Structure formats: structure tokens, C-alpha cells
Amino acid sequence: MGTNVSLEDKFQAYVDAENKVEPKDWMPEKYRRTLIRQISQHAHSEIIGMQPEANWITRAPSLRAKLILLAKVQDEAGHGLYLYSAAETLGEPREKMIADLQSGKAKYSSIFNYPTPSWADMGTIGWLVDGAAIQNQVMLTRTSYGPYARAMVKICKEESFHQRQGYEIVMKLAQGTPEQRSMAQESLNRWWWPSLMMFGPSDDNSPNSEQSMQWKIKRKSNDTLRQEFIDKTVPQAEYLGLTIPDADLKWNPERGHYDFGEIDWSEFYEVIKGNGPCNKERIAHHKKAHEDGAWVREAANAYAKKQSARKAKDTPAA
Amino acid sequence: MAGGWLNSVKRDFTKEEALKEYLYFLADDSLILGQQLSKWCSNGPVLEQDIAIINTALDHIGRARLLYQELARLEGNGATEDTLAYFRDHLNFKNALLVEQPNGHWGDTIARSFLIDTFNFYLYDSLRNCKVDSIKAIAEKAIKEISYQAQWSAEWVVRLGDGTEESHAKIQESIDNLWMWSGELFENHPVFEVLNDDLPSFVSIKEQWIKKVGQVLKMGTLIMPSPELWMQTGGRYGIHSSQLGFILGEMQSLARSYPNASW
Image 1 (cartoon, rainbow over the protein chains, first blue to last red):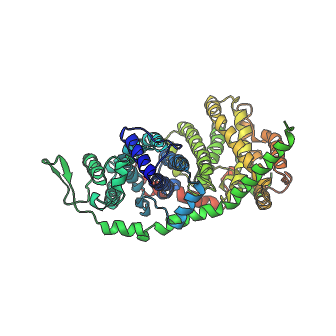
Image 2: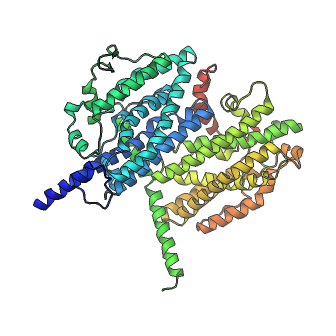
Image 3: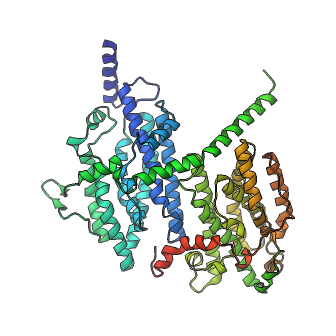
């Protein structure tokens, strides 16, 4: 017991000195579990997040827009892959993470439980959802776990590109025909509040935050990140001539920040519980692809085994 | 060539018209196949292959853009890559029927890609030496990605063919089912004679294609159906299967709902 305490103290001192924790280093079991939970949740968010956008690839209104969207969704698949690999360095196999996603044990960002009925959503997701994600992820490039921090550096570069692409889609709509303009406004109306909820519950209701801050997995509180996002986004909406759907939103010169209205946390908790418009659809889609692909994965494994057996047969014993 | 009914849609081409028609064959094949492959996004059997197949979709759509940009220049009258992709009807699409066949399961998609990728490999390889500079440049750029595509789909044919009993039966059935759409790729067409020495006739690819397809199928312990079997035809003349209407309906829906918008 005494040894344990001192190892934990040493670990905390190591982290406090801004050192990176690497896969083979000793770490408290709870640190490891927290990271697996967070990184796999992040990976699942990338993977489930492909669905609402893939929804518009076949209908993108120009070839350029189609290519950009397709490339973006491909990037998300790539992010999922790095993140699964980062979680695997903590000893969690990808198959297990996928099983936990499908059983509902592991979560993904609730924002992807909303539908994308409009092309404008491809712009709004890039602008707000990727924008909110970046706010979180820039912080994570300095997270204490080395493989996660390094994965986030690459991911952040691509995400900020996505955010600019999203903003460009919204800008074209906002500066387009009256129908396009109302498409952009309608989409903003639907995504604004769920985007603010992406930062998680307010600090006094966020059970995991304190420990994560202490271990430097997380470096800014949910409310701080949310405020930064709002302060950054309001002028962008003003530039487009779009109205943010919050009557209480106004600049507060004393605080040096925008004040904003009350978030409807009951909606947030209901969506997390599985009662969002697309929770069932997203998981069913993932399961179907996984099950439809089972025979293909089996074939690839069988072929790989045959090949290595053939190779072993052809190689003379040393 | 099968189908005497084609005589009703056959016509003569000037050299200028023939060049455009030839470009439509290439561009429409790329776009329709890219559109079909893009539907695999988030549906692949494993994440790495989701990424790989999106890559091939990106390549096809990227190539289609280059070809439509060249066509738009030749067509004039305000044509753009997007008016050509979004505002033509099925009668004006000249893609081979093979590329509009449904995705089906992974084996069906792989078999379709394998048959067309092998064709594209030999076609674009010979286009690198053609006498039309714009097409030559596009072929030079495209051949790298086409080599990758042809290798990727051939490897999957072998893997599925020599994988499990189930995968063997599935991919054999996919090849057998798609076979009747393969002959059209090498059909003679009036434009080939007009373009004569400037651009290769698709007929010239046939022997290499049969040889390569035969080799790969053999590696996958699969049986190649006879190239002499009855083949479907019509795509190069704008006469399509029922599939194309749905593909275009989906692809063009938003662009056509707001014809005056720019995106």
C-alpha cells in the first residue's frame, strides 16, 4: 500500500513537471482507464461522425463540394484509426472498443445523434461542430499522455482545415440566393445549442473533470472552453449576417466575454441516455456494416494464414 | 456487337464530335463509378478498407473533374464541369453499363472494380502516348492512381477467391453475374474510326484485358467465364440499365432544385 502511494506521488510529480507519460511507463490504473475511456470515446466520435456527413456525399451540389466532403469524411476515418491505435497502446484491443461501442457501454459525442436533413448542415457541422471540437483538441495536444498528444497534433491540423471548409460552405449559402440564405439560418438554428453542449456539463456538474485536470489529461474546464468557443464564433456569425438563436446573447464589457442564455441540460441528458433523434440509427448503421463485413474479414484472415503457411513451407529451415 | 436495335441510335461523327464523345466515355465512366464507390463511405468491412475505397472514389471523381473541364472547354456555351455532371439526362450519359451496376456486397463491388480497373489500366497506359495533348496529360497524372486501383481490386479478388469457402463462392458468383456487362468495354464504336490514329480504340485493349483478368482469377482459384458469352450493350449510345436513373436522380437532386444557385 505504502509503495503504491509513493508511486502515485512520483507519477503526479512527473506529470506536474510537464513530462509526457509513455505507454511503457508506470501509471495509476485509474489514469489508464480514464484515458482508454476518453480516447476510445474520441475515436468512436470520429467514426460515428462519418455517418451524418456521408449522408450528403452522393447529393453534394457540385463536383468540387463532393470531393471536399468525401475527403473530409475520409480524414475522419483516418482520425478514428490513429485514435484506436493510441488507445491500443494502453492495452485495449480495437475489437473490444468496437464491441463496447455497439453494446452502448462506450459513448461517442452526442452531437452525432442529430440528423442532417439539409446540405447547409455540411457547412454548419464544419463551422460549429469541428470548431467546438478544435477548442477541445488544441488543449489535448498538450495532454499528459504522449501518444494521445501526438495524435492530436496531426488531427488538429486537419480539423482546422475542415472548419474553414465548413465556414466556406456556410458563407456561400449566406451570400447566395434567398433560399440558400434561409437554408444557412435554419441549419444554424438547429446546431447552435447542441454545439454548446459538446463541451459537456457545466463545471459544477462534471464528475470526471477534476481528476483529469490534476493529471493534466484535461487542461481547461468545460465552461472555459465553451466561453472561448462562443467568443470566437459570435463575430463569425455576425460577419455572415446570420442570427444566433439566443435572445440573451450579448457582449458583456465588464467580463470581456459574451453572456449567453441557459442551456437546456435536460435535452443533453436525454440524448446521452439514447433518446436523441438518431442514436438508434447510428448504432444500427455501424452494426450492419460490421456484420455485413464479417465474411470479408474472415476471408482476409484465412488468406493471410494460407499465405504465411505457404511462405513457411517455401523457406528452408535455418 | 450485339443488339441490332442499336442501329436506330447510331450516327456519324465529325472529328470534333468524336473527340468529345470519346471524352464523355472516359468522364462518365469515372464519375458514375466514383459516385457508386462513394456510397461505401462508413459502410466498409473494416476501417482501413473504408479509407481505401474512399480513396478510389476520390480518384475517380477527381479524374472526372479534369475530363469534364476539358469537355466544357470544347463544348463552350457556358458549359462547366458541373453543368455537364448535374444537368445532363441519362440519354446523354455515355458510361459503360458495368459502372452503373449496383454496389451489392463487398465482393460485387470488388468484382466490378476489378473488371473496370484492369480495363482502365491498359486504356490509360496507352493514352499516355496518344496524340491529343490534353488527354495525354490527364492520362499521365491518372496512371499512378489507376495502377494502385487495379492492384487493390485484383488483390481483393485473389484474397476473396482464395480465402474461405464462403468468400470463394461469393466472389465467383459476383464475377459470373457481372460478366455480361464486361464485353461492352471493348466494343467497336463509330468514333474510333474517325479518331483513327489520334486516340486508341477500346477494341485494342481486349486481348491484354482477357490475359490479365484470366491470370488474376487463376491466382484466386476462380474460373473465368468465356469472353464469347452474350454481352449487354448500349451505354456508349446513351441506352442504359434501370440503375442509372436512380444514380443520377440522387446525384443531381440538390443542384437541380436550385438551378440558379452557386455552391
